[in-house]
Amino acid sequence: MKPQINFQTLKPVAVAAPTVSTQLELAGILGAIKVRWGIGRDNYRVEPGLYKVGKPTADSDVMVSANYKLSFDHLRKNLQGINAWILVIDTKGVNVWCAAGKGTFSTCTVVKSIKENSLDLMVNHRKIIVPQLAATGVAAHKVKEQSGFKVIFGPVRAKDIPAFIEAGYKTTPEMRKMVFPIQERAKLVPVDFMYRKFQLLLALVTVFVLSGLDKTGFLFQKMVETSLFPLTNIVGAYLAGIVLAPIFLPWIPFRTFSMKGAFWGAVVSVGLNLLFEVPLLEGFSLGLINLSIASFMMMNFTGSSTFTSLSGVQKEMKVAIPFQIAFASIGLVLFIISKLILP
Amino acid sequence: MKTMQYLKNVATLKLNTELCNGCKMCVNVCPHAVFEIVDKKARIRDLDDCMECGACALNCQYGAITVKSGVGCAAGILNGMLNGTEACC
Image (cartoon, rainbow over all chains, first blue to last red; front, side, top):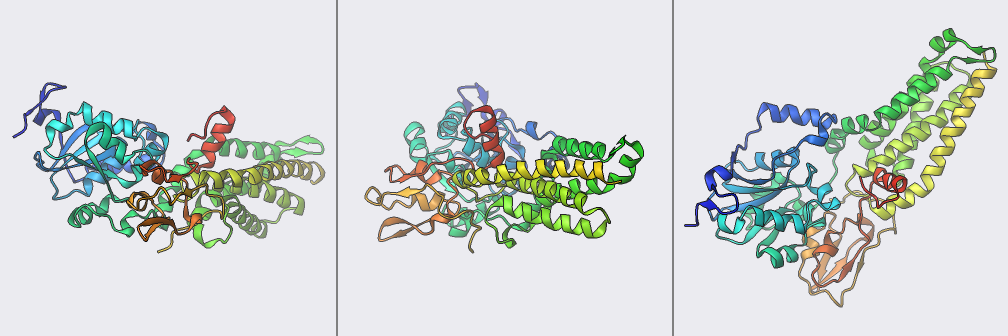
């Protein structure tokens, strides 16, 4: 039997390691919905430390997780019927993959956490199960060198953990593969919607006010009467870039995200021009702005996607950004001109 | 199942088979199944599947893999350019 005292905190083990349920509470489910809308997203944290699931003994497995509450909840709800320890690393409230990329889920923080929580006193064995996506920041051989604990990389998705344990702590090729199905892409829509909300508002206010321009000066009534079309265009282009393009991601043949976005920006523009009867120049000018907005928003989706590389995004941006700036500027100028020359 | 691919011929991933001892660590950590083991040596199946996350290079204790790793995130790269730092989300 191992000592029942954690020597660093001098607290009895039972107190030092709180037990958590594998059932999510209502607050957790509501919290997940809120956080996907970006509400309180920067402060959705779990206290780092050692937790118990079920009734773990000194021989039970240790699962390592990030201290982002969605990551932690995802792990624990997939541990039903399993007795295990969860070691929560302080990743500053960031999820596993992003934290590994940023350096907060790293060899150093894992080793630090093993030591701070006196893991060597809590368990008899010397192995920890780390999510595979943390491998971007965690070097297994270095953790072993520095802490004596062997890192076993578990599956990408927590739901595969029972099968992974069953298979003798081995992942199958399917468990290791990061996929990006439509339901995962759809889940990202709310957060992307909130992402540029201030810029969206600014663009809406700009076209709203500009709608009132006239060769005689500024007409309040013209602004109110003719602003619906430009406002619809801006919102449509924004949604094209964050909803249509991500949802239809694999089915639009362009490889660059900016082109996928521009494609949907064009579709929305054509659709709105068929729907509304507006002067050609105004329709065209807003079309250019739409291409720019949809393209830019979709280009940002590279950050949410699971398969874009740094070199690739850099290459894409070098070409896309000048076009986006040019289209938006020319579109804006033409829009103003259309207002000044047409009644 | 094939995963989605991004741009062609941009990934900076390089494998030096001379240093490889076939430990399979790269196969185990890669989220896009870029590697396979053939005749006890790692091999790159399709370079265009690589997203440069850097997990393989970090976990190759023989130093057989190099990649200019980083996060393929436009917002992060923009932040980096505007603040004059590395790409950071």
